[in-house]
Image (spheres, rainbow, N blue to C red):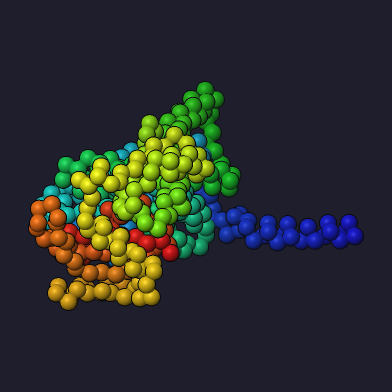
Length: 445
């Protein structure tokens, strides 16, 4: 019986070893090194290709065209020097590390200058949703960059080349952040500039790390020197380069993870602890930083007394929100901050939840102009939206006796978007619907 089990384990091990063996179909090591080294240099044709790709990507971001942006990413040669740095670190080739780093800096500088010039002269200055999506990196960007880099370097080490590299270029999205940084520079919007550069740094770094890991896993030959002292010196330089690159990235990645965890926990806390019949949350703001975590809620309806509020605050620790400040505004203290369009949205949310009318029907105010059908675009751009309602409404201001018109977008979502994503959706809706004011409300499934 024991021998039979050993045979089964051996067969399973052999099957797994054969299926996942990266040595199969591996290209000659010198060919891989030569190919990546050549692609690390931006001189002549590759440099002009980069400039044209940047212009195409900037136009795509400017007019909010996903297809144009994807085309620019397919043209972009930016993956070359990043993989060159990772290969140089993995093979102890300090010259390749320097060459890749130098060319990456040159490419970054030229890309930002080119996109800045474009955004400075273009008559279209409004930030569209595609551009806004590149201003605030998330933990998902780290995962995509790392796994995309793994796929990219594995493809680069194969004898038979495939379409993996273009796919990695699209997934890791190196070019749009640089164009967004150029937009921020041209518009004097420094949060956009530094946020986009941060995203580019995250993408580049984790592609480089994944390249290093695969190179070492495949046991590429390390460069040896006749003088042991020189070899030790080069090894120290490479180690120093790796450390000053990886240590900040660990901190940044940790910060991104902690922010995502906080926002997810806060959304769950709000959803479960503020489920009242006569009181509703009509606005929420989540703020996260190293020194401050705050959940700011605006309530409408019956006021919650202090005992209920204290009981809710005591449950923050159950949602791993220790140290977070819960700020609740309601009643007379909130009257100056209430947005009546949000009250209208809250009423419509009740209709969607309790009524029999389907959420995905498009309600058009008979007194307003017809609104376009944006279903196909929402499916492509915001897959978390499952159904929506779009209508023009009139708000009667009680304090000034005036009347305002705005467009109300209500959506049933698989998960309530973070504040940054909500802002991107509002900007996209304003541009797509050609309206001045859009209010949004999100209803979890």
